View 1 (cartoon, rainbow, N blue to C red):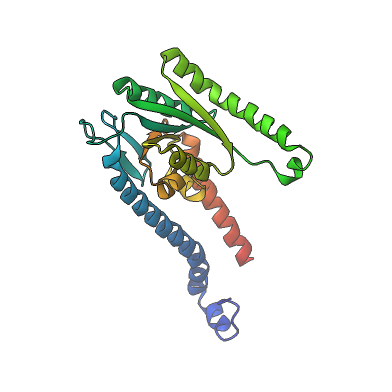
View 2 (cartoon, helix red, strand yellow; view 1 turned 180 degrees about the horizontal axis):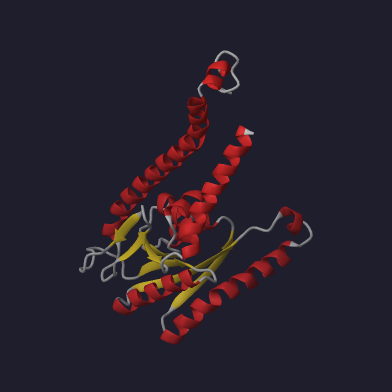
Length: 255
């Protein structure tokens, strides 16, 4: 709009450096907005973790959610909390990913240190598209979701059975973050143990992170168990891809 304004278009034509700077300002403003939003999210999560950390169970080990710009550590005091209930319910969201299994193993280690923990596994199935759901009865949809949930829970159940750690399983349908928060409140869970992939900052800014949403929305303490370091493809491919898209949009706008 600025470059096409009749009053200043001739002046911009005589000053190509200013004309180029006007176009370069577009990705600069967008990137500044991304960074500002990310810093606000980072601050909210750090404040949330600081608020919830003292409520972790005794004997809990340290776990962290760490990226290049986001690092948060959860730790617990070694002594029992006065007035704590006899059994502390721990909710572990589970899917068929290796990161979820890491969270289950972390919860198993907590149980082996403190048998007062009661483990609850939760699998959240995505809602079927209305174009698919209209051809299936409610019973058929429920049976399909249950079969998918059982498949997703199978690996975690096998490891818990092998270690002889008692547990209960739950499954539901809907938005993952909302379902996790609702189940934690319904069970009156003492804390949540979540597994997450270790991703770079740009990836976390661009995607809708379930972990971040749970940390922001739930009143229940959260332990976050991270996966291995990001691959070279994600470390370099995502930033280069984002830069390529921005360059392409800038070229189309200039054309």
